[in-house]
Image 1 (cartoon, helix red, strand yellow):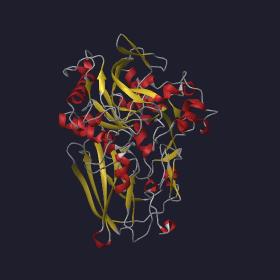
Image 2 (image 1 turned 135 degrees about the vertical axis):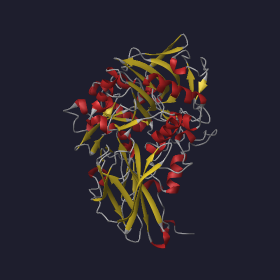
Image 3 (image 1 turned 30 degrees about the horizontal axis):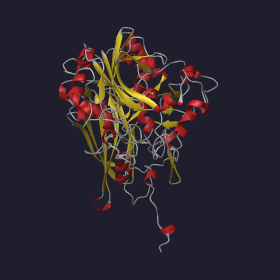
Image 4 (image 1 turned 45 degrees about the horizontal axis):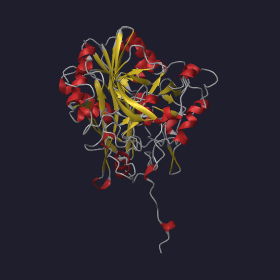
Length: 531
């Protein structure tokens, strides 16, 4: 019988993107000095590679992918990288820079780094930057705000993120509370191959079966970031922009970190659009959006999972989120900026629903693991007469967004609600605005998955309950509240503005799959709010 101890077991969950500085191993990564720029700015690119030289190709990503800059045979540099680069930053030197021409349009630009080693071995990795408009709001009335708080939270380049880390070759479910923005973005979050699974692609669980996670299976098999499907440009904002630009909509672009620093950058626009997985916000980011809406701006949020308050520190270079609130150094001092779930509003003093109407804690999972594994993936209409449903031919109790789109997948948002005469109404005990109308909804799993038949990757009841035991919550929450939730589409008015909230991370799947109802609702929202 073979000695099993002699076999090397490869733990795919312990994959880590990190330089080896071994000349015989081809590797290349890079990042830019800042997240966003305007025309005329100098972009500094920081690259580590074992190749003697490499190429740079830059293109504006979207419906039409236009190459705008190339540079061949850039001298390669091997750079020392701290073991804790995920929190301290890489501290790499600039290896190339260029000035952005005035004719480049606003957008998201991908920087493709191409290296070639011996035996015709080739490798590509990506970096990115956002090009803001130098005439904000003058040409385009809609601005897309990239969810860079969530990008950062899930980016595990260097070995850790706000969920888990790799130490000594072992994968540990131990979050890193401090993350640096001075590091590359993990593989798959900026650019993914055609056919890479989405959360909406999870198969229905067979009777007596176990849950499956196609995204994880694919990531482990092809050595992509295990979190590539959780967040990032490639999975969420890019498919939305490809659809919208094909439809004729034009956008300016900002990041959440931009509005954290400069809330006035929203004010020239009619509509701020948020897409995809939108989980992490700072107090200042919420201030920016609240002020924008109060002054007459509108928000179109085709996203879900509004859940965690973060801090931005170190001149914007660090993001902080202690998953155990009581461990945050601010716990006994600055409660306003405490990192916390938005359910801890008694401490933070700011219920989540005040800003976006819905919250992740009211959701949170559907067709994900053991959470509603056989749900149909659609939403049921309750107020078909609302302007959101114009020209859809949807009736009361109709469903939209189901197979093959499955927009009600992964993580979703909701509020505490009740039914009267067959219609859902918010109870407002969680801070939901008085004007909030629930237009469509469907059941979802709660904060944790069922412990029946091994939830595998998500928080079980025994893991999740301590989050809520250590701090007082904004309102009474029972175990049932944490196990049962909903997905919702809602609209409310705040000040002079309007907020539409689709409440689903996978809303964009309906655009990818060309679901008629999802497309028409999206048009209705953009056209109404920009006008």
